[in-house]
Each structure stands twice: as structure tokens, then as C-alpha cells.
Image (tube, rainbow, N blue to C red; front, side):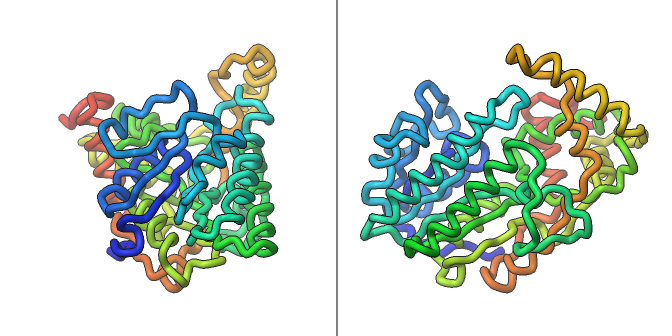
Length: 342
């Protein structure tokens, strides 16, 4: 496994947004291990349990607030911008825009005036590409976002890259694939289905899915901050190989000691039901039990070419898909969220 050098980060002043999230908390742990001095933004009232006891300079405020941003950026040599709005059907378009677009603009504008800034690492998403009609996609593939989360992430990245080019901001952009590993809960429902022995798939079930283990992502983040080769570049961050959801379910089943039976169902009735759920629930601020983005998860291709990560940045992922999924399954069992293998 390639790893970020210790020396450039040791003693450096680092600012992290999204530090209380799954990926952000792992990044902060690793930065402190490497000897960095970490400053982090946390929303008022947000929990910092994952980071309790660590020497972090906490700034309580919103990531799109002028005073908060000014305090966070002051003296920062490296900025890692991971903040993202929770992806919920009831989240407003204004929430997505403020957290993704406005925060990025304010951070970049403040950082561009700093004489000590060495790198601004912006975490976008492969979601900006939307459905990949002719996989695999590469960094230069067109944007085709299909929900408000993806649209605002695309808008933020587009603005930032133009701003950096015009103002000389030392920028690197990362577009992670689906992030997973111990600590993640987004894939928990899929693992629970595998644990029951029945794994329903909507549509053909042959759609491609691309993963990145959180520990690999953290190493890429730190390497992107200090590598001269990363300056001005965009990297899709993912395992070299994509998988199908069916394969994911079978790997999870093996790790949990279950024989998985795949059941294929047509997708269109679920899209129709999801549209009704959203129309009824969203105006009242109620989280729908089913929504179209969740159904689309089963029907879209998300396959990418990650060669640039290896050939330009020089990073080779540590975790294979099967090893990482197996490790994650075991962690779910340890937490008591899934019954242990029989």
C-alpha cells in the first residue's frame, strides 16, 4: 500500500470540514497520528463522539457562515473540505446548496488570500457523473447529476475548479466512489438482507457498483494534499474493479455464513410507489419509506476507470472488494447489528 509521507503533515496546521462524519472522523484520527495540528468545524449541537479526547481545535458553527469560515481558514496550511449535507428525501434544495455550494465558495475565497496555504483538497463525488451509459467513466467524462445532492456537488466542483484556475488556488479534487468499511451504516441494509438469506434485486441486477474502503480514501486524501503530482488534478477514487450488487450480496452472505438466494423483481412498480411516497410525505417534512433515489440505486451503472489514481498519484489500494466487504460484515456482527454466523 502506498501511503502519504509523514514529514509534510507533521506539525502542519490543518483544517477539516465534515470532521464528525464517517470519512472525516477517520481522516482526523490519521492526521493526528501523523503529527498534524487539526482544526475542525462542527455544527452547533453536533456530536463529536468518534473524536472524543483527541487534541482538536473545534470551531462550532455552520460551514457556510462567514465568521466560522474565517476562523477555520486562518493560518491553515492544508484544507480538507469533506462537509456534505445528509442525503435525505426531506432535505431542502436550499440545505444542499448552502452546505455544498456556498460553503465551498466561502472557504475557497478565504483560502485564496492566505499566504501560507499549500493545498485545498476538495471532496466531490462520482455522483456528479450520474448514470454511466457506457462504463467505465473517467475524470473527463461529462457531468450528468440526477438529484439535488449530485447537482449541487457538481455545481460546487465546477465553480471551484474555475475559481482555482483564475485565482491560483492550489487545488486537488477527489471524487470518491461508494465509501464503506467499519463505521459505515449505508450498506447495512444490504448486509442484513444477505444475513437473512434472501437478497432481492430490482431490475436486471447486473448494474455495476464501485467501492472504496474508507482507509484507502483517507490515505489518498493525505497523499493528495502533499504530492506535487496532485496539484491542479482531479482523481476518481475507487477500487480498480467494480462489482455487481449480486456479487456484493454473495460476498456478504459468505462472510456471515449464509447461503444467499437472489430474487429478481421488476423495478418499475417500485419507482411508481416511490413517486407516490415522495409526493405524499415530502410536503409534510416526513421521510418517505421509499423514494426514487433508493430504487435507482439498483438500476444504474456506476463503473469507473481508476487508473489515474495509480499512474499519476502513485497510490495502489490496500483493500480488495471481497476483503473489505468481509471485514465490514464482521464489524457489523461485532456491533450486534447482525447475528453472528451459524
